[in-house]
Length: 581
Image (cartoon, rainbow, N blue to C red; front, side, top):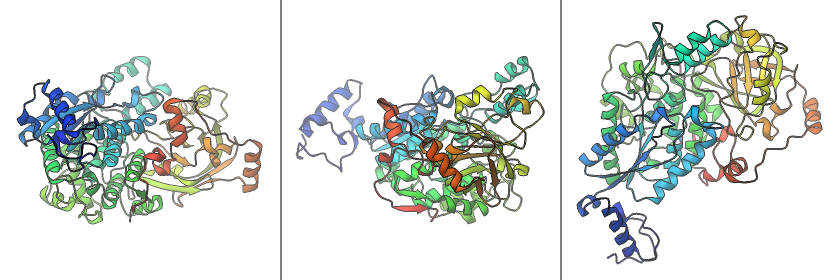
């Protein structure tokens, strides 16, 4: 029996002795815990090993995690081969297409679930299995707050399909074919046919959407084993990565390599550099900001923009390029990219292996000839994929994915065509009576963190049907929401402050002139300060509220995009650094 104070938990405890249930007697708590777990057939020998938790996010509603059962078995194998005891446990699982009203609304809830399960159950380290857009950031956020050794295992991308001998993959091609259908370029039969081919297997989107972006970011952060970002979900490579992840988790538990030693300001800066170089999803900024905020690290968006001017897009992957994730994997994956970015990286940043990022790049070898990752001398795009805009329309900043925008439209002035919310847009966007021209600017309000709520990906405003059928492929669009990383176009996002809390976007009216200048990093409403003040006084904004439940918690505490759309009470209580430095 334990001789320790029966009322005080032992902070140095490990294995099953960690985090004992409060019965007022630690000895009895351990005795009872062992009695119950032995009912599952465990021996004392097994229960004396380091306990490694495995966050299981498998769900029938989440085909991106359809390989979770196989991954868990491979992780368990790696843990047991390394002398640990694997214990898998369920958490919330979020899928983009199966989450109402939007997956972002539930990301913080999943992070809380992950954090509290890690705290509640005895584990010396945890393996986080995630892949779909919001799952990886939610897990990293939760694990960062929990503070124990943690390692990320990506579920992996889907395979590509073929539609009438044309290679296709979700979800850039989803949007491309749907655009053709809306423009009446293809008929009902073909859109039904392509629907069967866009997702050829379980796994995450096969392009550089948010899921692939977060996979690459996780490896850049040092949170995966080397090569952990790119193997497709259904491959033997992915299973071997899972086994290695399990074994590494045991080593981390034994050495006490906690997550705060890996997720440093230098690591965050490396991830920002990679985000720019891969032409990554604009969502990556929001998620990185939230992850960093859990550790007290503030993201400097102006510095990010300066980084972008010296960081070219090197990865030839849709939507900025032409290839798919399985091609990136065959080209050497992140090791190939990191090798090319090496002069711009913080090479001393520690990884989950206990070695530095620089050491891992060296260990990966010299590389080989391939055509997916370009050289700095011959990039896909001369600057980073994302630019940060400012101006009187977005005092707190806004984002544009310049690598997937129309160069002609990135210096543009036009007339505002305003939609008050997503329902208003849905009602009018395809109407023959919509007053819109190709050189206008579409403005969508009230899809920010509080406005929707949950900041949905409705920022990818469709081309109005009357323009689409005339062959218009792009138009400037502005909102306080997000768009999928798989989307493309000249689209300004994350306008801060959002319209639902009285940001300037709330007072834009039909016919106002707006100027976009990516070169000058400007998004400007060409209306006088006096007129804006008059509009604000005439129609003051009342922020949305809720009476109860999770919606009330969300609306009362969610932050703006520049703070990661996290709950204010989940951020670290003090600022410990900035990234980039």
